[in-house]
Each structure stands twice: as C-alpha cells, then as structure tokens.
Image (tube, rainbow, N blue to C red):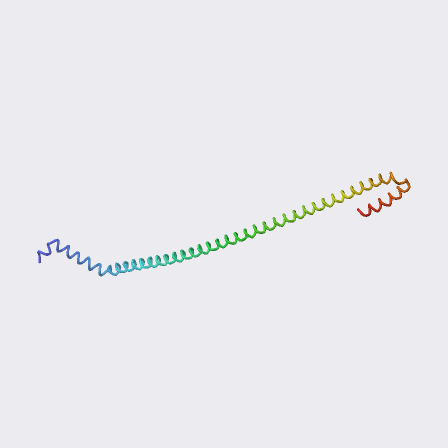
Length: 164
C-alpha cells in the first residue's frame, strides 16, 4: 500500500475521482443537461419561427401572385375598354364627318340652285326688257304716237306683272 501512496499516478487518479465527485455533488450534470435542454428549446423555437416565416412568405407570395394576376386582368379589361371607346369615337367621328359633308353638299347644292334661279330670273328679266324694247321699236314705226304710248304702257305693265 505504501507503494500506492507514493505513486503519482495513484494520486492523479484519486484527484480525478474527487473532481468527478465534486462535480456530481455540485450538480454539474444537471446544469449541463439544463444548458443542453435550453439550447435544444432555443433551436426548436428558431426552427418553429423559421417554419412560420416560411409559411408567411409563401402566403405573401401567393397573395402577390394573385394580386399580379388580378392586376393583369384589370389591365387587360382597361385596354379592352379603351379599344372599344376608341372604336366608338372613331365611328362617331366618321359619322359626324359624313353628316358635315352631307350638310355642306346640301348647302352647296342649295346655293347652286339659288344661283341658277337668280340667273334664270335675270335672263327672263333681260329677255323681257329686250322684248319690250323690240316691241317699242316695231310699234313706234307702225303706230301713231298716241297709240304707241297707250299700248306701250298697257303691255309693259302687264308684262312686268307676269314676269315678276
């Protein structure tokens, strides 16, 4: 036994045993277990948070994709409506232009008809005046002055009344 007391390995072994006894007595295994459990709980919470965030991100992505689809559909509807309005406005413009052309054509035709009527009236008036002058000249040569004047006045008044 003396041999064991003088051996340094023995005392190192005894120190090691005492160290383990003190550690167990102080509760180091419980503290280590608690620390490991706490760490496991923290990791579990972080994993749960990561899952929750991933699900939330997927929901947000689905929401944004749905909104993008709705926006695309709305844009398509707006484009379709704009095209329809443009077609309507174009057709209205064509109709309005056609109506304006028809009105202007009718006005021009009316002016032409008025000008023709005025020209015909002037021609009739000129023809009447020439006929009156010719009649005056013929009658002045064959009739006496008093006959001429009476006949001329009567015929001139009658002719003017008929022409005007």
